Image (cartoon, rainbow, N blue to C red; front, side):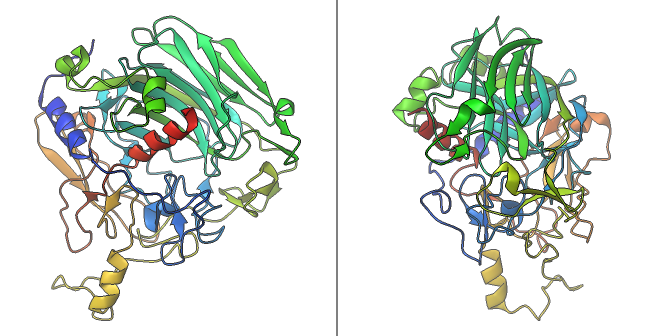
Length: 461
């Protein structure tokens, strides 16, 4: 059992608790809701409209203002990810689309312990999610991990595309002998898509879970043994004349979330094994639930032989049908200059600040207020044009990093201090060392993970 009773744990619990919210975010875009308006053109993964971060990973081209509103997605890069430090994990309030600066974007609380990654969930929070900064369009993806445990506690390792294609491994904390597998096509709930794999204690034992995804089939394996295979040919929908098969570029997502949150639907709570116990032995011992990742490996496969190619840098779509044949490999850039940008205005910059600290007089008060009212980071309000995150080291001191909004879009948020400062990833909802460049981050009536919970509830009802 992990015991980290020190200043780092205290910081993890207090900051994670700060992101808890009583109210769920109301979806504005998506199936049945329509598209985002041009004033806030990007539909985030969780159905909110905005600019900046809303237009990056997870942006839904089908329900944004136009198919080009989302920023192009960085192409697949083969890599084995280990977690001796958290230097390659970046706060969502700092990432501007440059995958050279980070491998993962985080929402919640990720920590390092003995060279392994912990995703944590403290009382009254909605857990933690990490999403890869590059996409996979077919490949072999594996994760070696120990799950969390307990009623209502859900661990997950999934692939999720901007078109809502999805391939899942999930674990319910009351059943440590089973991994659930599932898939979805464009987010359409089909209750016959699931399948289980039996294995030994997932909490105390590391297992390697692998998704082998090709244009023809998906194979789910555990510790090198195939547990399930899905053939594309078996997913043909005779009504729509389409294969209901995951087929579009996807991000890798690692997460821990409370399926048994009391405010969730009864169906979700029952599926998750009951209402979560915020006074369990794990909470008493550690202050949080946690899932442990040893490593994640991505091996990219070649794109389909008939794939459309105009370059080699990014994935875009040429039609909102969102099928394999609508994916284009392009040379379009993936980096925003600031959080005021979108896929159709990548170079939008924050208002210039004079030497006296005032905004450029060419921006009238009314214009500035109108810009700042548009959300720029999913799950935050008043996020403005960028934000600094805070990393706490073992001694309780902190290092702040500023967001670089130069034309390269590179963020300078990595800590340059000793390796001990990388032992904790902080959500970045606290201090901001330059208020003239970025407004303070506040939670928008719920973390974006609250919508994960809501979506999961829809899928299991």
